[in-house]
Image 1 (cartoon, one colour):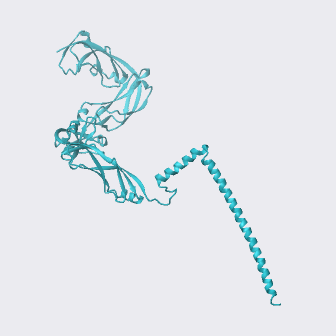
Image 2 (image 1 turned 120 degrees about the horizontal axis):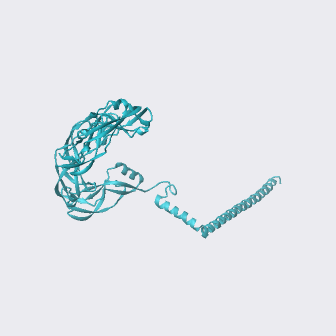
Image 3 (image 1 turned 90 degrees about the vertical axis):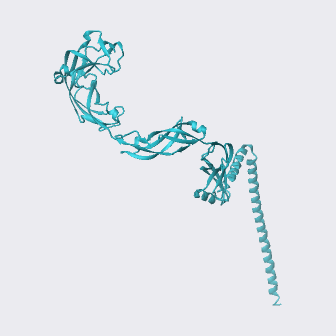
Length: 454
């Protein structure tokens, strides 16, 4: 009996344990059922929301736009950064590739080919970059065997990596092949970069080794040429030189014409000089000084200047006149005048002249019966006066007392200018000169009548 009690006890424990396990299983199953029910409710709710959004006319355009953008990004960018972590293929365009032409340039001229083309390169991104960095690729138009006429030729890629695919744009060209002829042209010249020389220096006429060149091109191209020039670069030139310079042909519009020029360069010799002339600075008051005053004295920091320019220009210049507005002078004045270079003069030794002007009371004096002369009668004409009294005129001078009193009748020159005179009876103006521009001189008569004969 003592041995059977433990067995009964163990059986009861097992039964109790089984009941506990069953109870817990029911709770777990119930919990999973509740979770499943909750998830399904969420899914059904989200599905309902999506259905309302997708199939609602109000949001249909927005949905279409989003889907279109996703599709565009997938096709054009391979989904890079959106759907993939790597790229298996890519493309890039190489622009402005010079076109290489294989043709018989000695005999034929070819027109119609583009100067540059572009290439679309497709392949692995690393291979594309290697191709671009290598840089020995080219696009070739092979015209070997073509004769005169119009032809369609293919533009073919060469030396591109075999690991990439290449498409040329344009891939073909319509070309015209014409036989070249020869023609002679007179050779002219032009100086280049003259503005980069010191203005002190003057260039001579160049001595060209050749006066003519031979040009080979198609007949139409030959006919379009307007002039052929040797271009002489003189940047920084300070002394005579001899060198070879290129020859270029141009059309009527000044556009360069691509032709064969024989020779393509010419040897030139150019002399460089620095002609100059020193002339006095003359102050030229314009108008009358107010309140009866006159210029007593002018002190300048430069009494003369050195002018640089061609000899023929300098030969015509004997003085440099400095005009000042006399009507603005009301007392002793300091002025600064910026030198205006005469036409053809390239440079002067000074750019500005400082003036110290002092005034004094003016005096008037009249010189009677000053003779009237003539100048510049280059044609050798003779003339007679219609009024004998026109052989003389009275002259009034006004200026500082010391200057006026120092004048004599011989210091005053009244004359007519016969440089551009015509034959026959005519009225001519009188000109007057004095020893200084600081004294105002007026003639009583402003003009006279003369009869010009041979």
